[in-house]
Length: 92
Length: 230
Image (cartoon, rainbow over all chains, first blue to last red; front, side, top):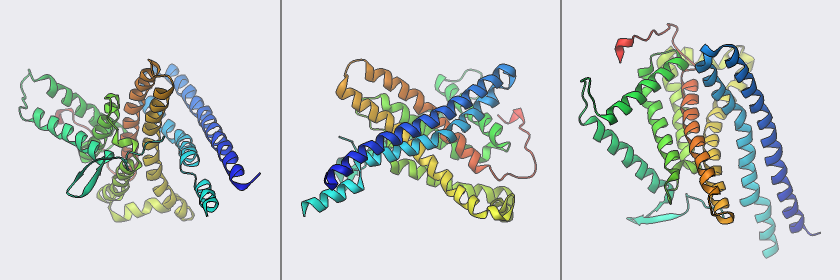
């Protein structure tokens, strides 16, 4: 296999792995946070407003890792620097 | 196939290319300013006020309460900044539903500008709250050895603020476009409905995190809201 084939194949593989692992771990974390918040709301319904607000902040924090992996995936798929470099080398 | 709103030109003005992001930002700005002028032109303090005034009063009151609950401080200080961010992002995100409208928040430049505003607002409001000494004390809190971590955290919080909004809105737009080319009937509409929900939540989260970051250094005295202030 030449370099371009390798770079192309591994870029697609890396993109798939990146979004799947990143999304999966963030999903686990957010599910855990939501479950705990629901439990807390069930125990103290009066504090639902505060708990919901804190939950949103916590979820936003947890979600940022998933967003990072999404951005990296988009970079790999559409703005891949290694692929562009290989194409440039091949064109010469 | 990926569409970059920053490079797609809408028209040229005096030799400058106006790209889609700037163009639709202007539309949202005109909409917000026009609505504000239209509503505040005939404010009434009677018992009977217009419907639009009631909507705006409801918005302002609720955002004031949210800011006070999160920061535990006088909400009037942060209200203008936070509410501008919130209303602008909310309008951008909700207008995704209009065909051919390209939301400015789906471009990294817009969200970076917002995050940069928050990044600059943190020291401004902190120094206003606790003085320069109180602000600098935040960096060696709880122990001086945490100094590099605190400085890093200062940057990464703004960074993630920009990327969170961009990633959410942009992925919504992308999913819409991909589904439109594969399954043009009904399915894109349901994803767009989901996009409206995410857009509203993201606007709320952006404003909420902005308050959390800005009011991280607060004055010693606690603030008691007097209900007569409304």
